[in-house]
Amino acid sequence: MNQNLRLVIGNKNYSSWSLCPWLLLRYFDIPFIEQQVSLASADFKNQVKDLSPTGQVPVLWSDNHPIWESLAICEWINESCLDGQAWPARPYLRALGRSMCAEIHSSFMMMRRLMPMNCRARIAIPDMPTALANEIIRIEELWQQALDTSGGPWLLGAFSIADCMYAQVVLRLQTYGVEIEEPLASYCNMLRKTPAVDEWLADAYQEVEVIESVEQLYNNNQ
Image: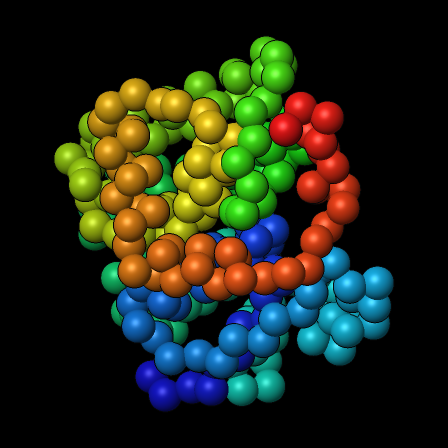
């Protein structure tokens, strides 16, 4: 399907939700124009108001039509550009994947607050709160359930929207030095080594903008 696609994203170092549709497009080599708006800019709201119906990123423009919210964008890409390839053929696996994606879209608030995405940083969390540890355990349970059900190597067997939605978690675990056991550690390593994720990280490392609230979160413990 021939379309003019433009994906508006935030800083690659910080914008966890921008990563999800960007990774899906890149992994499947779908051509698109990337437009970045700095989350660190004092003028962010003015810059983004004409680019996004919600005033947030990411948003995908197909010709003159916007699609917003990471999961909705990924679903649209799957239907319009991939003939359903980004979800498995098995009905239960599809349902499992959608359940997992809905869960990360609405949950894990402690991780969002205490482990914000910051690709450049390497930070040790002092005295990890129980609530945060429990969220990480829940994510590990989800990943293990998916791998056990699908047989791997990706969460749902083949690379899918679920991997795109949870890629941000993989990068957060790396930033904050959270160790997980096999086979989940191998899954994380595989995802980090994909060319698309490598490209995202390389770009993130080159960015110079700083969001002070993120950088100062554990400043006294670095």
